[in-house]
Length: 395
Image 1 (cartoon, rainbow, N blue to C red):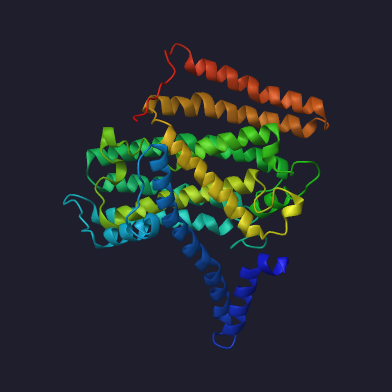
Image 2: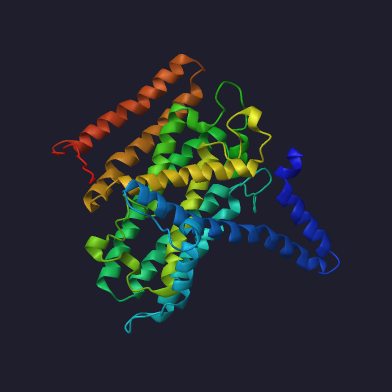
């Protein structure tokens, strides 16, 4: 019973293919198999985007002592439908001087890579669209296309604010992509593979009182924190939402977009958020494995989505509590703090690998992570008069 629930989607796919054997020629069966693998991705994650927008607005309302959406549908949970209908029927305005072809293609070029990267993410046991030996390379190579799409949107609009927002976005994404990738290299070093499926399998043991997830090591914990921060900046989420900067450059690179094109930018941001969260789960949190061996009876895909919702809640929490950084603070943090720590963490992973197991290995590796963190943090804050924030709430 447990295995049947765990593999229910594989069973449904095979049953559908068996029904199509007598309908489609043999040359099209492989195409049908690909379509059946991609349709769940194209349905589940856009629906997750719709649900997340409502949960995020409600969560931010609670954090900021105000109401979230509470009018459309039960408890306001159909607000995403109202927003979608509004985006569909709203007038599509294109600037007269804009490059209309590039202006039209930019949101599409942003959404397509955000969807393609899901093909290599193992969502459950045997639930991966394409099991590539170099799946991580595919993920980062395809994901890098989003930077081009952002620049296309800013440049084609013929608007100085859009172009400024695009340049800031590209600079930010390039800067934080380096520590993002370096934080994953530690996992590749320890697992000895670039395949996301094999990386998850390498974390499937339950030897001690903690599962053998990479996050439960000094280098893995440091890499996971670096990964989360860099991923937050990569998808332009607060406090790294400088490309939008409403108080400075109006609305960033998509200022000249309206209607459904604007909704596509919104969709791409959340799809990218889900994708990097899924990659973080795969690399550091054991993928679809349960936290305890006694809980392995729960279907593997449920564990993946439980971890995904936990990371989404973390990103919502940070958005509601942290103020936006200045441009100089953002770039200094990337190059003077994140990058050195990511490089030091590579050395820490190497030391962990070659030292024999035991308490000395833990002490040395923890010191190699904590020491540079304190020194780099003190150097970054040197000469800055930063006082503690005091928040007062109205009754």
